Image 1 (cartoon, one colour):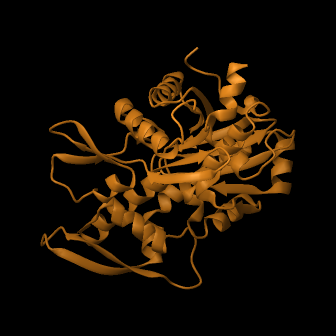
Image 2 (cartoon, rainbow, N blue to C red):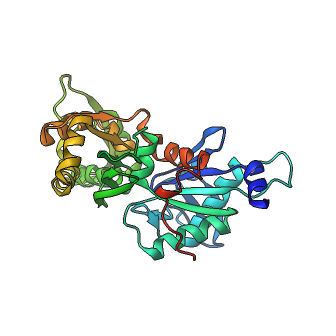
Image 3 (cartoon, rainbow, N blue to C red):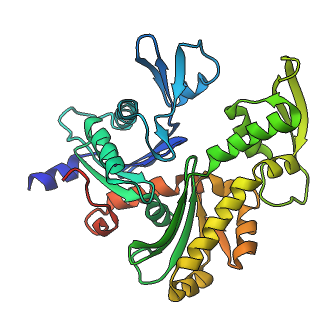
Length: 346
């Protein structure tokens, strides 16, 4: 009875705890927060100075003793204490209550497929310590599929490719579970690093990761474009040490990120090869769904379609697929408990 009463009054939330960005869904309100998973810390005092958008603005622009860190690496917690503070900040920011007697929220968190029990425990404990009443975990491919309105609980095969900041999750889903999958530590961040390395090797130019990401978003592509795109690449000349700007085309960035893109395409092909023939037939009929920020890379859907001989669709608003999936679960928790992971705290 008490649990049911708490369920009525608590402001339950779903969280996409991403390497690059954290998104929060509040029950009955929708997606209310999308901020970088970045925390600025004063190393002298160990004090947290800023979290989210404010912390990201500090990247590369602070004294040496102030560092902007990402407490998640490759989709899992690398710094427990900082993650806990970041989660507490986001939960409090979205849960400004009208009256203090409102119960603490139940929280559904998306985690990468194949996370270890230790990693699951870290996420659960961080959320509990950050103010959650109950914590439920859902694998990101399942959450992305639910957010993309794929009927995951039916006895038919569906395929989702979720390309985030730190990980790419490829999964064939049927009856509310993952049948075959690949989880790569190659995604948007790796592409940014590819661009930094390419600029250094080919142009003797030192770039920041933030600049590399801007270039990727502006002109990045997976296939040759009908109209050439250009963009200024600005950084420090490694020979003279002075500022330098060169104008580059989409061909350059496509060459820079080729290896990472090929790894993602190969993972999709391998996952299809492992799937039962009946589910492959379903995928051929329904097509492959792309979600996550990486789905926005120009022509990636065309490349995967060409390589797999299968139709490929980009989910509506792919950036929010996972968090919308956690939202669907939190709105209908009783009927969707089967898609959740068992708790590592029991």
